Length: 228
Image 1: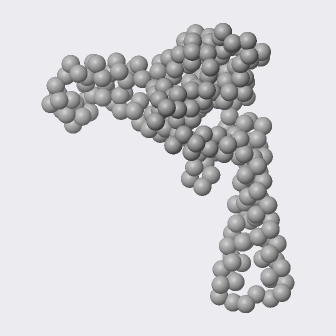
Image 2 (image 1 turned 90 degrees about the vertical axis):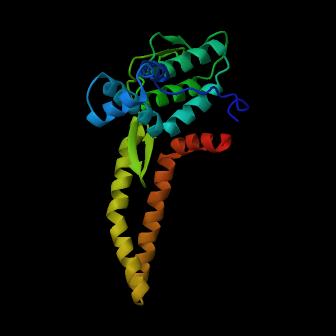
Image 3 (image 1 turned 60 degrees about the horizontal axis):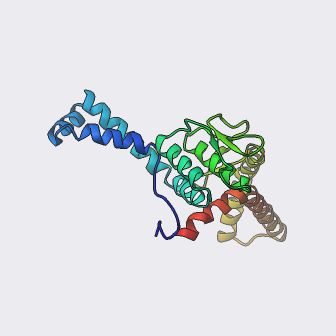
């Protein structure tokens, strides 16, 4: 499925994990079990680091999937290779000339790739002319939020709007829930019905506003759906 979609599978800190696997292979299974039980010593430190890196990959599996899909869209093979290597190393060691051999390149695509690199903890930013990817942190990075138990990312510009939107929803929600509970057990008066309808209207408007703020992130989510 991945090859058919043109996706090269790799993951965060792949080189370091391979190095740790190689080092751990020199120790017997019993030595590794003992290290886990005692939680001490060089073998335990290797296992602990490996476990932390694997956990990082698991926790960031959605961002990793998005990144692999976006990188599969890079046309220049040399640029694609360097991006894959940066992911495997967990850092951009040398600047990457994004233009490569192509006279035209997709700046928007590379900006998305840089944004997800930063989400994964790999410092990345695009130069002013859009032609170079470096390890410099972005001037205005994305801001994470947790909405309905899901982590979402928005631009720094949209963050303030989302904070206000979430605050307004949190203030309105209890009133709407109370009115809804009343409606289930008693008949509301005409004025109460109007008040309930108005609360619903305001709540739906806030949800619509939130959808608009999260539009870019939700479009990004569709990447995984299209490939899966």
